[in-house]
Amino acid sequence: MTVGDSATPLAKVRGLGSAQHGGEHWLRDKVQSAALVLLGAWLLTSLLLLPTLDQRTLTEWLRSPLGAVPMALFVVTGFRHGLEGMKVVVDDYVDHEGNRFAVNTLLLFLAYGGAGLALFALGRIAFGGGA
Amino acid sequence: MAASILHRISGAALTIGGLAILVWWLMAIAGGADGYARFIELVSHWTGKVVLIGLTWAFFQHLLTGIRHLAMDAGQGFELGVNKGAAIVTIAASILLTVALWVYILGVFQ
Image (cartoon, helix red, strand yellow):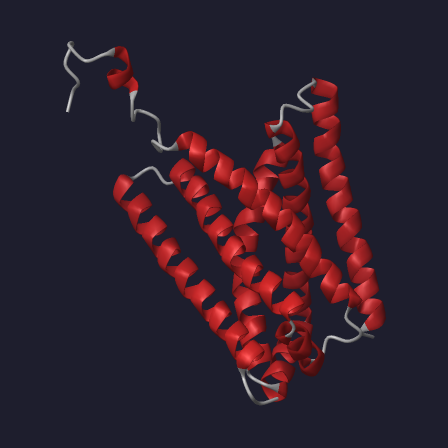
């Protein structure tokens, strides 16, 4: 595991960062956060501007491209951001490595399951025949 | 410090509570008028309202501290006075926005 003395200085430090792709991950997190600022503002504004919030109005709204597409983006970005944020919290506060792995894996499954359910519901609203 | 821990707490609340309610809400809309009526009935109960008001505050707090963090990542606002002031603004604004929104919501829906 240890790098021999013959290794160059770069080889000795390469890959030693905590996540090993820190810079890339950091930037992606910023872009994701900025996207959620816009999507969050869009969701709140949309709900306030809708005439009523009954099932029929919401269905019509989520059938239009301007409702369905940002909502799908909000679901995907929101779940990804939530998962990555929870991983930061779990990595900081759960000391035992096995427990950390278990909690992170559980959160991963929950996030993919939840996002899948939300997108299924959205597809049913947007493309469903009835109601 | 306080703003940082609030960012984490509100983020965790939004992930666990907020996303669960988002999924439930979309499933309820997809489930038709009767299913949606059941959803509205449950969230209109006072416990449902308490949860929603809490999540509204978490949404605004996380959004505002998130914007503050984006500004700080761009190298802005590290002076002690500015930094502390901005942190206090996020907390005051999140509470004000939550109150304003819920006064509006409770005004419109009885």
